[in-house]
Amino acid sequence: MRHLRTWGVTVGLALLPLLACGQSTKERYIQLSVGSSLFYLRDQAMSPLRYRGLNFSAQGGYYKESDRVLQHLETYFYYGEVSPNVYKFDINGIAQHLRGDLNYTYLRRLHASASTGPESQPSEKRYRWWVGGTWSTLATYRYHYLYSNNAYNWDVLTNLNLTAQVDRPLRFLRRDFHLAWRAFVPVVGWAARPYFTSSVGEGFLGEDKSHLSAALASGKVVSLNRFFRLNSQWSLTYPIAGGNALRLTYVWDYYTYASQQPVAVAGHALLFSTLFRF
Image 1 (cartoon, rainbow, N blue to C red):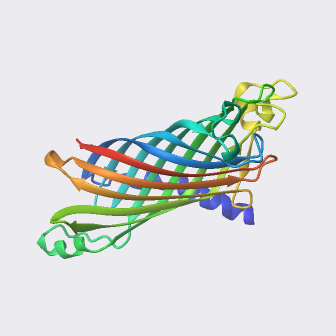
Image 2: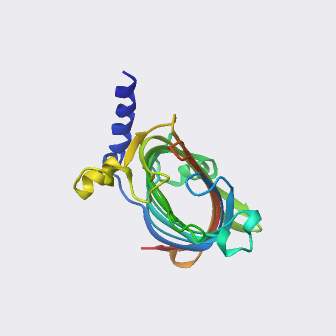
Image 3: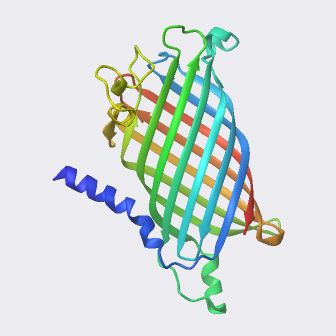
């Protein structure tokens, strides 16, 4: 019964995008971002030490928004080096860190008013609340300069998440801004990591299989008992000419996966963005 409830929630979240049919689109944006990030990680398949380091960050997104529905398709890219304090200036203690994220978010507004006339203006000064789901996928690659037998480690995680957002207009220094906060946590997903003695997935070891079968066999279906993630994002948007906007975003992301060799990663990212309306 518990498994049926879990998969019922999964299917429900997966079908959320279908509810968008028939919704009138009010605005569409393309967002391009660059910035910097600070990562902390402990990968037991690589080392028992905690590593940290500054990374270059970039982001791209497609946003379709109306008064009732938000749909966001976002991709993130991080690259840099991480090292423990004891090997901070030693090449033998440094690891390359490469990560990519792909997120699709669908949110519906709670208690959205159908009114579009002047009488609806006072409601625009209040908080707006949104709920829905996010399908998130992240892939991380690490290469340790010191190791010669097993220098490569990686994670692949894809999950259905519960998502909430709250936003409101903000008047500051005689200028109009838009402040928003969004967060998601996983419900169920699929996770893959290599064994300690090998850099290839478990499914590629042993008997011959197709590449797809081997890739699927390298991972496991996971829920909160083995995998947890919390993604929190603050954004401050400033409208400019032509319906475009500038945006400052802070992202905090943490995940932990209790595999045979556990991994835990936390990251802070600060992104400067330009939104182009079309």
